[in-house]
Length: 234
Image 1 (cartoon, one colour):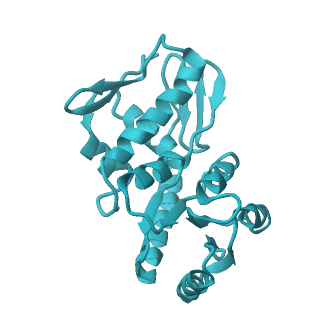
Image 2 (spheres, helix red, strand yellow):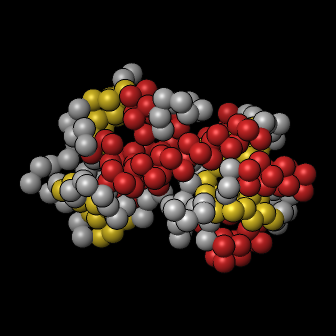
């Protein structure tokens, strides 16, 4: 198996070097930098398997870097921040991040998060190879290629948005609680809260609505319970 490549972006050199040391102990190949513009350059050249981004960076901040990466890749992204306020957490995850760690943190915790994200990404991609494309009247979801097409138009989703949509579609016409969705997509051992589900559903709806307008809402909100996917069978 090829060596896993990790991109670490933080404006504090001590944090960069600390994480680099711990990650290299796990036999990961690590590249580091301290600002957003350099991060995007390294992303193109280094082609990492996972990225760790600090939110507060000189120049382009971590959210901006995350958005730019998401235009080209679905690799797992873990955000770092010195702020633990709920709004920061929702903001980070809402813009395409897969996980969130608040400073100060244990480097072992970050390594554990990296392993968790890589494991989920690997397991999901392997299991997806043996899944047939899910097709409804106007919507098709291809797990092997992470492709969603609506009325013949391909829609770009982040990794977590795709996995959430796929999870709901596989439970077509069934009401799922936000806890069930969180456990099914993020996992029982993940850090986070149920607002993450709400944010990602909102993003998915926005992207689907751009194609079909208000004529069809594939994800119905069941107030006080959760959500239900409603796809028209062929």
